[in-house]
Amino acid sequence: MSIQDPKPRRPARRLALGAAVAALLAAPALASAEAAPAAPWKPQRPVTLVVPYVAGGGTDATARAVSRQLGAMWGQPVVVENLPGADGLIGTRRVMEARPDGYTLLLQVPGLLATRYTPSLKGVDPLARLEPVSAVSQSPAAVVVSARLPVKTFGELVRYCRTAPQCSLGTGENLARLSGQQLADEAGLPRLVIVNYRGTGAIVTDLVANNVNMALTSIASALPHHRAGTLRILATQGDRRAAALPDVPTTAEAGYPQFRSVTWYGLFAPKGTPPAITQGIVAALREAVKDADVRKAIANAGAEPVANTPAEFAEEVRRDSAHVAELVKHYPLD
Image 1 (cartoon, rainbow, N blue to C red):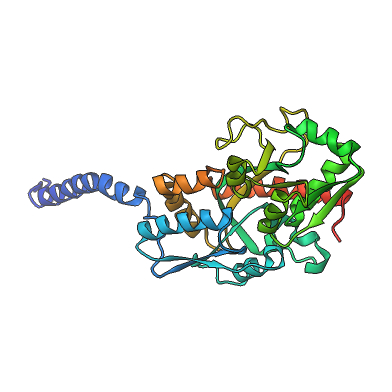
Image 2: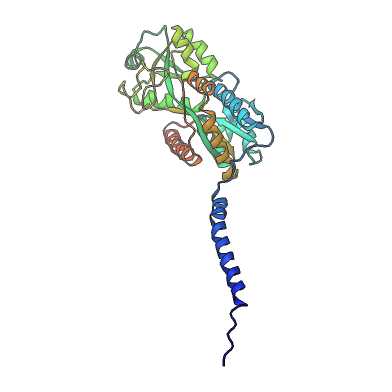
């Protein structure tokens, strides 16, 4: 006869069933905890935003507006540090040599891409030691002339410079110089003289006096004088008309689509900055450019807000860098 005594087994079954139910009830909570995204990176001490140009320009104005808003959002000061010189390399090098921890950032423009081709800068390649984070804003370059010049359109300017004994174009950095050489070559202006300046401010002064006839410069630098009637912006060089200048045609509309030039104001970090940090900066930047004061400062610089991803900005930098390399093949810098 077998002995059947199920009583000792019942508590064990109840315990097993209870544990299974508890596990099932706990599973969604555990899954939810595992799926919850980590909070975006935020600085725990002041951040330095380096602007490698003099105070007062479009780059500086953009940096100061953005830094104020980021500082308010982060609860930490974001200090703008102007370090001009060597066509932007002095300030850029400060960030290239900084620790990749998110506390030292750079706001630069496409002129950065010509650095490696400038003999006097000994072939330094900043892009090899910088991490693209995001474009803050972008603005087409502008074709600007003295109001004393007898031209009202870009086409008239080309025709004038083809027949005048001499036409002069002022440039404040190497990328504008390359664009000027391209303009002289492709528009058939063999007598165009390119005059190099140390900064945009001096170009604008000489444009107003007609000591130099034209320039390819930022909208921000020329806009107040354009509105005052002492300079004329004949065309902008973007894919569409600039929001700040809806009545001014693009160079493509004027019949010269090859003269496209869009300036981005871009954030960079030292090479090796962890993705979690760059993504945290972009998340804050996206909110910062929604602020009314930031948008006003960007608009006053003749630009529009962007705030794209590190991958998108890196691809934009790569394309522009390839374009600069092609220009340098035809018009070597000396």
